[in-house]
Image (cartoon, rainbow, N blue to C red):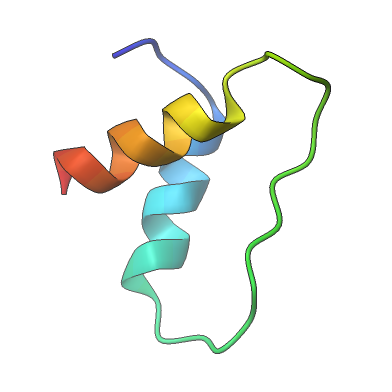
Length: 43
């Protein structure tokens, strides 16, 4: 998996019990969907 700074933030968010929505914004084709899939699969 490519290292991305956001991955630790996403992991923390998924482990928390908050009822907030996570919004991931960015330009096209920078790996938004990729990093979400990789973080979820690694858990």
